[in-house]
Length: 223
Image 1 (spheres, one colour):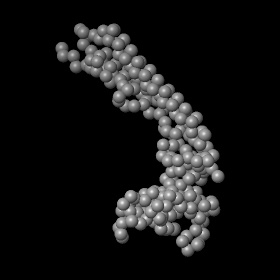
Image 2 (spheres, rainbow, N blue to C red):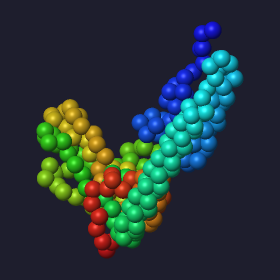
Image 3 (tube, helix red, strand yellow):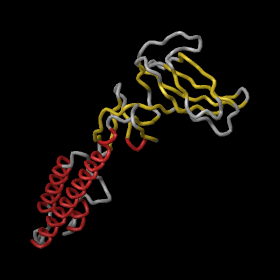
Image 4 (tube, rainbow, N blue to C red):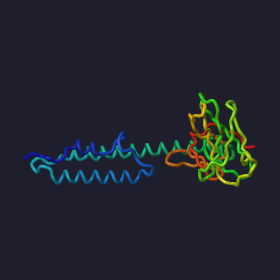
């Protein structure tokens, strides 16, 4: 009789390892699912084994030990990741109440917004373009190529006040009449909260915006 049932090594290799199928953030459900799959495969192997050459109890014990070891390693990795995230949040808690600089929309409430533009190095001219929450252009200002920051007062070039709301800023760089680059401009926004999201530290800004902590280019004390 030809034994077509999977070997002990094949069953062991079916269990997840550290280099395949990384655990999701929940951890527990995935491990439970993998264990059910492991038991199903092991039961199938036992049912279809050659009765003249049955599976040895030692092989059975090895397979259980292999899966148990992998399970413990996965749980250890998850605990380490969770601890690292909590430590990162503790460090970032000092940012609450401070102003972070990042390429995010600004929540305009009547106070001026400080914008930090970045022009393309090869540009000959550039404009600061302001868009409302719907993405419509509401203002456009020429930029000096050496200008490090701009204070936007919330009015158009003609002096017409704009309503409170969320506005985004981008820099349109030109060479001659050709637009060669368009990129978001950074603004300063006050940090209201620090939280974890899928293992990443996220900053919640006043006005409801969110940004990953590693996307922040500068932090300063609020005025």
